Length: 144
Ligand code: HEC
Image (tube, rainbow, N blue to C red):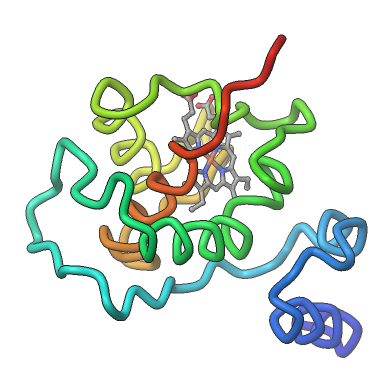
């Protein structure tokens, strides 16, 4: 990372807020990072088909932070997509959308050798990914 990138990243991490969304959007090379899931009940290795944390306040809080760090640059601040990547508020809510959510989040997506979305397997734990889903599930779907 260049010094400028480091400063932007550090400022972003320190505030933990979206004080500078433009700067964030302009720096599309922000590295994916693990999500600290301390306090959440651990999940084993097997990939679950259903979110074990739905409605859990701590999971929702952790998930919002994890989303902001790892997903917002493509899927939009606050999960409001600018149109480049799918709007995750439009996913099937709750159990119906869980299996697809975890599959896509772990595996990412590529087309004709081009990475559309990086795989998060090995970067964000299953706990972290389900926490993000818990937060997404609290958002009302867009009107359009
Ligand atoms: C580099 C940009 C990028 C990042 C970062 C990214 N995504 Fe994606 N994501 C995409 C794109 C592009 C697609 C559409 C892929 C396709 O059409 O095959 C997608 C699709 C998805 C889907 C399927 C949506 C649907 O309606 O079918 C889910 C779920 C998803 N992403 C979750 C996440 C989560 C969770 C994170 C953060 C941990 C994340 N993504 C980070 C670009 C990204």
